[in-house]
Length: 245
Ligand SMILES: NC(=O)c1ccc[n+]([C@@H]2O[C@H](COP(=O)([O-])OP(=O)(O)OC[C@H]3O[C@@H](n4cnc5c(N)ncnc54)[C@H](O)[C@@H]3O)[C@@H](O)[C@H]2O)c1
Image (cartoon, rainbow, N blue to C red; front, side):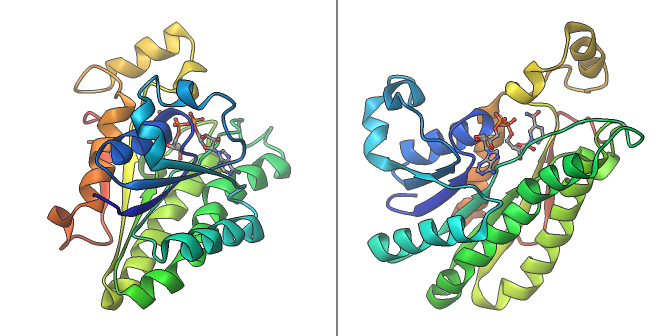
């Protein structure tokens, strides 16, 4: 991973933060796209200040193509290449279909699905030119199994599956591999929103009887960025403790 240029969207919190840390620890140059840049970077790296020389922040809203393109162009200008894009930024706006507003639908689609389109479109010209690239999308098992109260979120994550497979077919001849990791439940702000009863119920259905740690998702992202996975493209990998079996 040394000196690989890696964009991680939503890399300032939760799973994205774990992904950014792992790549930076491996010597990659991590470009974090986030709407806001943390005030305290020492806190962001949990005191591991040596990581800071490998991490750079860009204020980007992934739902805004111009905002994405501007930062991607800056990176290409300064680094001359982009090796890996991790489309991790994601949001929820849960409600039952009966109560979900069109705005709630659009909000989730614009970030989760269109955001991945925007970022992928912005990087592929460079990746095609260099005949090398990895795009790793972060989906969710609810894109496969569905979830009441999350029609917008699960549809956006199912959409990412189609995006992944079509991009994999379009881009394989240029040695650009596209895969999707579908996490089950992971300990982050997203799952903190659940109450204790909801959490206990959720764990009951997971064969491994626990939720994941963000680093367990980051490990798989690193695998898809690594040479060990160079014959894998267009795949959906559930990293969910067996939940979707
Ligand atoms: N936590 C889970 O249990 C879980 C399960 C399955 C999938 N996921 C997926 O993993 C990814 C990360 O989720 P998380 O749990 O770490 O959530 P999180 O809320 O901790 O982090 C989401 C990140 O996305 C960023 N983001 C949101 N909107 C953005 C925008 N418009 N532009 C740029 N960045 C934006 C946020 O700043 C944040 O860094 C998401 O795609 C989520 O859907 C999470």
